[in-house]
Image 1 (tube, rainbow, N blue to C red):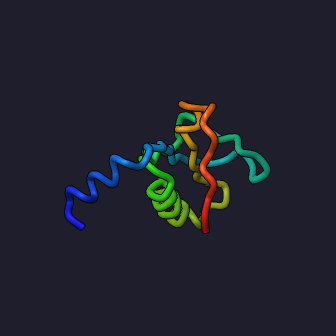
Image 2 (tube, rainbow, N blue to C red):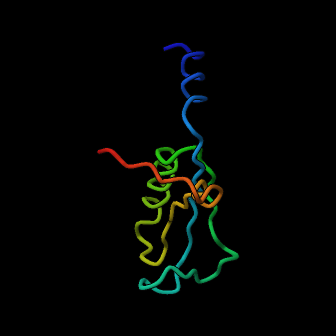
Length: 90
């Protein structure tokens, strides 16, 4: 596949932005952060697959800290709440 083919394919699929972020939680029973000012913003990604790769990498780095959690936020759902979410296959 040439770079032009790959570019055309990327432009054809819809952009679904995802935010990966995390930090230390107040407790394991909640999603409330101990200090929101110290959140680790990993980045914004153009699709779920790339966001999941970043999330997995950060989660693996913090595996020894039980209080630290990372999340994927579906920004595209906030930006366009009326769109029906795609169904996952496999």
